[in-house]
Image 1 (cartoon, helix red, strand yellow):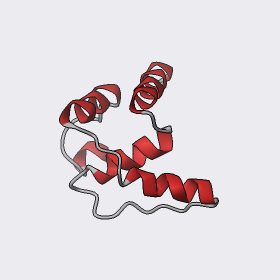
Image 2 (cartoon, rainbow, N blue to C red):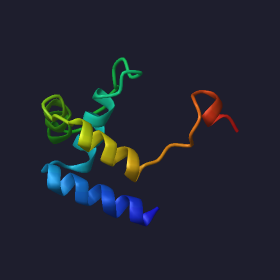
Image 3 (cartoon, rainbow, N blue to C red):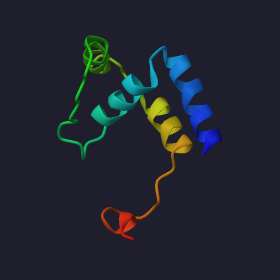
Length: 82
């Protein structure tokens, strides 16, 4: 898990964004996500959420994230069933 986090932090550094902003940007690129729900407690968190709207993740970036965080495989919801 630590290797994944290190790889993600490196990705975010290259992207020039905070991990939370990059994660929200990734959610915005997922067709199955209709509307990510954010709950900022500070103005800085709110501004980060707004900044995620402008973060462009191309196919290479999305593929890299899929490599860093490989899902359980299969299709939802079966892949997430216990």
